Image (cartoon, helix red, strand yellow):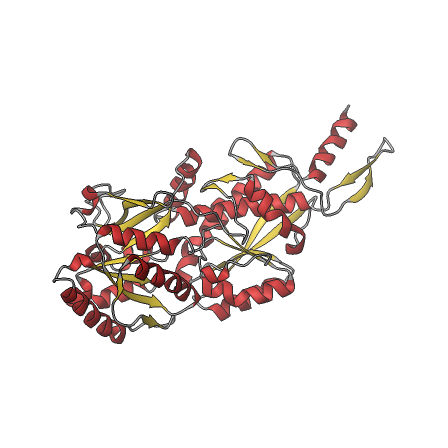
Length: 449
């Protein structure tokens, strides 16, 4: 009976059956990537031993910036990887998981160099491409060298490509542009001033947003203000934007709510808003943003007064608040002292999808697990909800929450002690195209169309 039990355990391991019933992770077993024939001592029986038996599976992780590394490193090392390893031990798999962690320092070229470094060390599965410019720079190399790249936060529509080596646990901004237009219109905005990061991500959103806005009857005021992604000084850009806002407010009868600044930026946000304080016109209208500014920890930490004043109402995929989400949220916030959100939950889910893929394929090679990504995601309900992907390997479009920055004492605040916090101030349903504003959170009622 002992030999029979041993044989059964090995067969199950070879099958790569990963069923996480207790925490909602499950996927049908696939054909393993290979096996090694062994003889069980004392029986003469021949069974198959899993190729990954006793292996340490290594995934790469490239933080988009040094700021992201400060939270990404402990998150991967102390929450994500231990979760994978605890589950492997529970299931009796003789496998461990480890992340090789690096930093792109905010540069697309550096990100590509880090990917090349992973390849030279034999790692062909990694999480990175957090900024679309970084994913774009690495994609051709990944395709040519069969390296699987998973992103938790790249949303550029230009990267929605079928049959490539990039998968994204987040939704592409193809869905964001019409949602942003509908929300701004519902708030009463008639003229938008576009202030954007000059990269494939910013360009992709603007190229979709502008015709949608014009078709609604809205106006794009002045020229699009497009700043270099590496900029640290924004006075020239803000001078132009300030004059454009002044003219647009005048054209709309002097009503500031009729003019909205579309801000498409990332970690440079606090620098921009602190400099914007010196420009009365642009500083005193509402700004509207995307996932790049939603719940920005840099904004709350480095420019709390300014982000609270401007609001920076930003769309972000709605969080699926389950007990599992709340558990990981509590652990993350205790570890990093920062707010947990959808994109951070995506990171955890990517880890589980990759671990499942590797165990089912019994291979650490990107090319061997590539075709497993979509079917595994289809059958995975993770920390952030259902991980179903579309035909481009991107997450299906969900409803949106609209997050703003407010003082910690504001209605709905998660922490009264903080100078600035992120609070949902509106919600958008893409099916009905309806926006519901939380006027008690806003402290005013939007004037509407």
